[in-house]
Length: 259
Image (cartoon, rainbow, N blue to C red):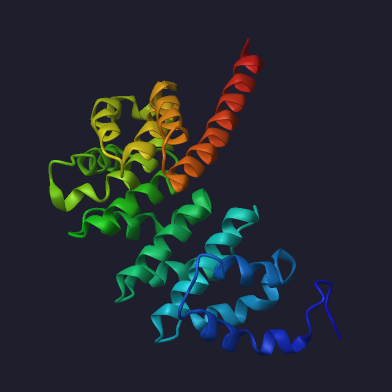
């Protein structure tokens, strides 16, 4: 007998095997494909299987389930059960860094409801791992009611591209600071030099707009990309122009509400 999503009972029995097969190799579409198969209506039925997989010795399977949890948290307002949140927090102690990273991202997506993870995220924040500490800082912005000064200070430090070992994290730090909006105004002078690097230009320009409302770096980036002789670069420019237009519409709507 099928359930409301049209899934046979065998689907739930075979879910663990499905995760095993699709976990390696993972494509950018894997999580969407699995999540769309059961959707929000069947998540509770799948949860016992997912929780058992989080105890698996196969890191790729654990990471995939964490990614599915993250999508659930992003798309469904009620997010995850307390039991599931505890299981995600436990994954912060996993031996594989990419699993820990996936757990951090999931907790960030859960937002304020993941407050049980604050202490553990703060331990990662001060640990000697630039990648994980940067992502922990970003997650804490979403989880904590008010981002603390140490979170802001670490993100500013990651914007210092003069330090080669930290330069690769500047884009992630820019995206995290953008979430703070006007509260991150002091970061703008450190963001502007990132506009000179093709790898960090877009996230820096987006952050500057979201923090102080300066649209010029984004408009210049869109113009440069749309006029590029490279097809892929032009397509990226057209896509970004749509995002910028949406941001401006939202800004204008907010202005109208308060005028």
